Amino acid sequence: MRVVIQRVKQASVTVEGIEKCSIQKGLLLLVGVEDTDNEEDIKWLSKKVCNLRIFDDKQGVMNLSVIDDEGDIIAVSQFTLHARVKKGNRPSYVNAARPEIAEPMYKQFVKQLENDSGKSIGEGVFGAEMLVELVNDGPVTIMVDSKNRQ
Image (cartoon, rainbow, N blue to C red; front, side):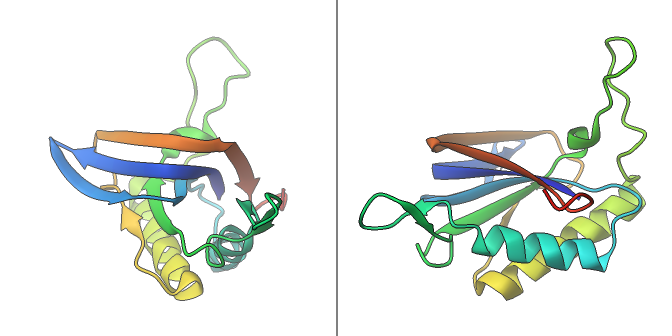
């Protein structure tokens, strides 16, 4: 699994003109699933996201997690995170999991985030055309991949 983590001052997801979720301070996660992902990837990635110290403490040092800072989280499924662009100019998505695999994994990841964070997680709509808006705070944007633990 790959996740792009963005520290935000605010974020929202709108589908067909209807706002599905919105948060103020917290994290916006773009989540990409590949066929080889499993429950171990989900658990590791959720713990990493919830405990990543990227929020400022009182001294202005990034020393707090989203849990410590009482922030919220939105997770949006994003198969394009697994795009391959080595050949030609058209991305290939052969590494992205098919919807019948990706959707249950994405849903399981959201549940794991809820368990680990103790909060309800905002979601996009799997497979839908979404308008994702955010105000990146910092900006702080970090990509984490459960396969290489980076």
